[in-house]
Image (spheres, rainbow, N blue to C red):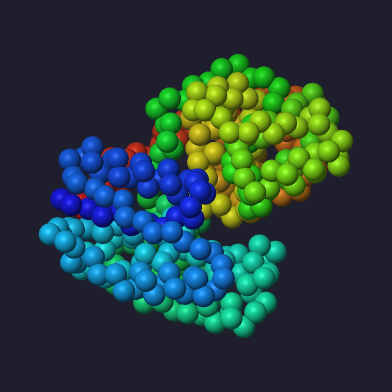
Length: 347
């Protein structure tokens, strides 16, 4: 079969969505099909640019290409849902979160307080509901995304998990006294929670924060303001080998992102047999972590996070057991590209 994988991307910003797209195209080809990634740039602002992107995708008819036809079109992100094709399958990474779960929060105040933003929200919700009802199958990448889709759009969907990029290469080693948190340095990822927590940590544990992004300067300033340069280090981007090593030797992994759609960090920690500290409002991470069995789920407050870190340090045998339990839990979840391809294409 000839399969189109359709998405959008903000140029120069790469994260989980891009990893998923690359992995999906690769898996389809390895399954013996032709696959092509089809993408356009996306702009979050101003409102006129969001609407322009919606109109462009609504005008696209994928049934007619120059000499080729696609048997299936897999749509991953808003606003690709609006394209025309008789056999569309949705595997939703996320919708336009600014008008859904992030609406009227500190993350979108500039949008939700304007009449233009309010009209955009109404239009997107209405258009999403109409478009997604025309799909032959609707999947999401996580239960968190499915719950949002049901709550806001009254559309049912099935959750379809996929493995992290390096899923066959993780290993575990004896723990060293540091908590690891690799992620883009962005506001939604909430690295500031871990940084503030380190002010309250009593054990001799460091926080190593990997990644790059728009919040780098602000986070470094926060570390200096709290005078905890000796407790927290921003270690930048890592190679794959370095990433695997930092996971393997960590005492545990922190992932406190706000209402995360999926969160590779949690799954990567489980594959490295390391306990995960996450927060009650961290979305899909809470679906994966079993509190006090494979990790610790705490309130998104620095003092609570600090207590969890100390818990891992002062009870390291128990921390090791939780990490191994996390690895076993991962193995029970049928997280594989083979299952993804089977569900998206063959069933």
